[in-house]
Length: 223
Image 1: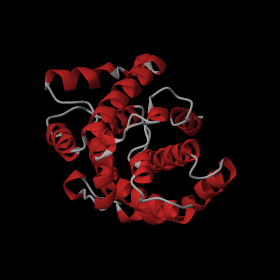
Image 2: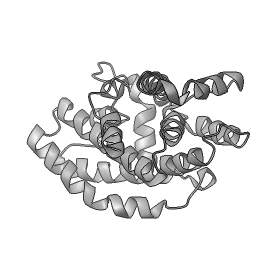
Image 3: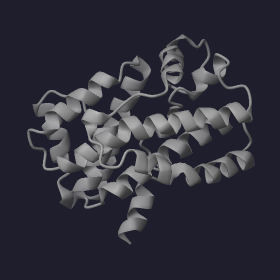
C-alpha cells in the first residue's frame, strides 16, 4: 500500500499545477524545433536526459538532508541558481508551493509544514524539485522510487502537453510513453550516486527554446 500511495501522489489528476505547464515543449513547437512525431521522439529523449542529469542529483541530495540540516542550504541555493529561465522559475515556485500544501493535507501527522517553515526562515525559494524530494523522503519513500517517479512525471506531462498541442494523437502519445519506459533504467543508472554538485545541463537548444516562451504571442501553457 505504501507504493500505491506513491502512485497516487504522482497521478496526473493531483492538483499540483503540472497540467498548466509544458516545460519548453510549446516554444519548441512554435519555433520549429519539433515538426513531426520523429522529432518529438528525439526531443523527449533529450528532455529526459536533462531531467536525469540535472534534477535527479538534486533529488538524491535532498534525500540526504530531509532533516532540514545546514547542508540543505547549498542544495537549495544551487538549484535556484540553475533555473535561469523566468517562466520555468515561476512555474517551479508555484508547483513547489502547491505540492507541499497538498501533501500537508494528506499527511498532517508528518509535520511537512516544517519544510516550508525552514525555507521561509532561511529566505530561500522553495522550488518543486526540492519540495518533491524532501517531502517524499520524510514520508519514508526510498530515493530510487522518488527518482523513478520524477522521471515518470516528467515524461507523462510532456506527452500530455504534446497531445493537447496536437503534435500527436492520444493513442500515439500513450504508445510513445510506453516505449520510453525502456530507457528509464539507463537514465537512472547514469545518475546513480550523483549528488547536486555533479548535476549538469545537457539540452542547450531546449534551454534556448524555453527562454523564448514569454515571447510567444498566443499560449496554451504558462510555460
